[in-house]
Image 1 (cartoon, protein in one colour):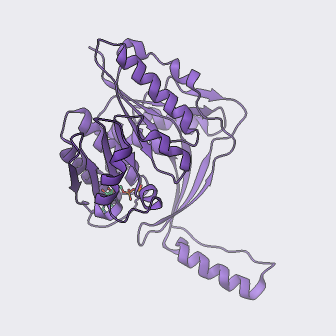
Image 2: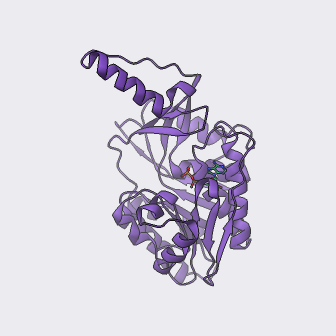
Image 3: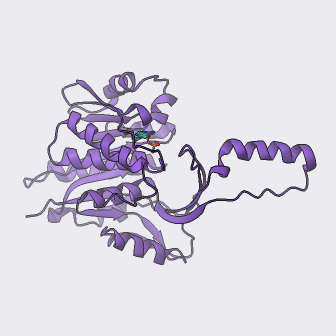
Length: 317
Ligand code: ADP
């Protein structure tokens, strides 16, 4: 009867994750200072790590994984390269039952990667990101999807650097909704990185997720203050959600009331990578089932907290 699928757009990368206590930022900086003091021009640094693994990454791609594990029918839309990493991505997306049949394949470019140093003592992470020169998804690519077939119930976007294109994609869904008598697609967008141009996305979606980092960049000191102030930028009837790390999350419901959830820390913090993406997935899934905003962010914090207690996605199924 249609309207079952959640579409998540639009970036996939490969994370090379190095797990190891010795790889902590502080240790690395100390070692570098020592090196500088002894032989500035001729120094190599060896740091052992406990484990290294490849993991499909990127915010939208991570949220797709979490949504699939929660049990949603999920399609990922993004740009994939025909590089040596493609087989890894194909197998991994299939493993999680993520549909990716409308992804655009680019030739002759390597897959963007991030080398991540994950500290096994405190689950902090250091990320070296290499985006390469992969083109972003275009509005024409996006319009090729079968939106008229009543397949999609929800369309979620990661706010990428080309915010005006994302905005145009969101407006396209609004137009389709306005001309449809057959159920509407809900839209959401994540505003995460501190990029000025992302502010144009605040009034472009039904649900807006804003990261703690972005909110702090605007000068907000607490999650309650952040959601209250940022809500004025959203469109009428929108929901604004702001996860705040170990403090939990806050949100504003369409009626303007502020709701909060505590964090649900695991017994032992193991890996906080993709905690935010997991929070978005779980909150989005709960909202799409008709749960209240308060219940949705509590579910988001519970699932994200559980994720922080495991390495990668092991144990989430
Ligand atoms: P990210 O680190 O990916 O930017 P956030 O810090 O915004 O993500 O955290 C997202 C959600 O993950 C939070 O709302 C919270 O529920 C959960 N979370 C993150 N860090 C912790 C933690 N140390 N303990 C418990 N829950 C956490």
